[in-house]
Image (cartoon, rainbow, N blue to C red; front, side, top):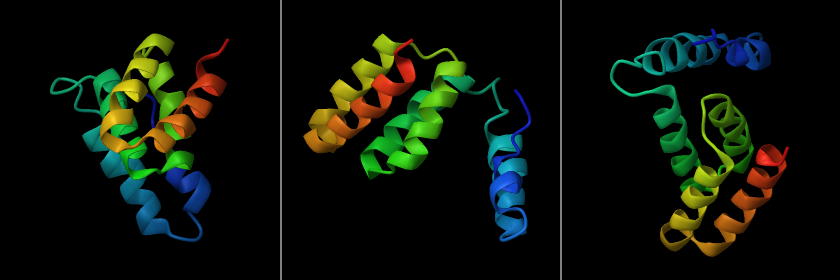
Length: 105
């Protein structure tokens, strides 16, 4: 997995400890445990959690990452459709707007 630097790139000067935890612990230690759960599966789980919360700016970033980790357009559409019944129809519409932007070639 590519070394994550988003925390340091975006918050390193403002919140260096948070940036360190984001890059080194969350992505460096947790996401790198691919012998326990693949990056693709972690991306699916993360997208589901972010959609459920309505955290759409973060969802967009994780959809991009998920596409790089092998999630297909059809899989993302199925994830959003399934979650519409558990998280809410408006959240599904918002998630589909992001997915169309990211997964349309």
